[in-house]
Length: 208
Image (cartoon, rainbow, N blue to C red; front, side, top):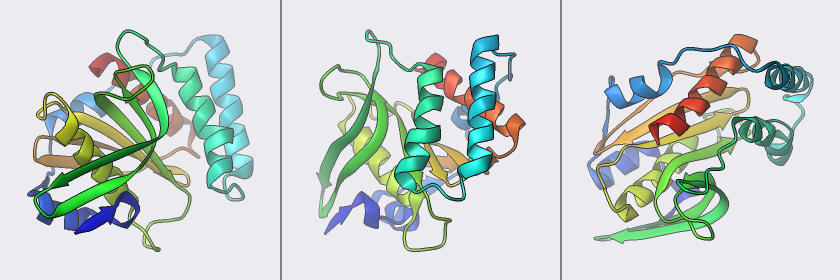
């Protein structure tokens, strides 16, 4: 059986790979239970400007506009470039085959070791413009990519982190062994929630 990430549903993945959707994982708590510290004045000004831009436009943006106008600038402000430990990659293929299941697809954005080629992934980001409950499962798409990365990593027990975005809502996820857990939504139309998302993204660098 061959499945692309886009066609994966999270419940199917639990059946195929023996995963459990957990209610409480310490690894997720370590990711999201962060102190929202006061930002540098220049960065804070840019975050507030992005928030205003988002409020004015998020209903109208298509998927690429959401990515270019809001998500990419946020990632740039976080500064995920650390050539010695990890590097951002976009639109890179991942693929694996276990028994009779083959998963493959393109990862929208991830942090991984390596410079030209992603070698050991740590964090995945997937964005999806439509509201959930339509024609695809953004959690399933993200989880499928994380399962492939877990299979390919040198240490399959290493915790993997992810985030998927549905319009205004950000959801964080961890894959810890055979267990995974997702957060409730962080609605970034609320400025305090955007600051929290910013702090969680910063924390990913610490955890890596």
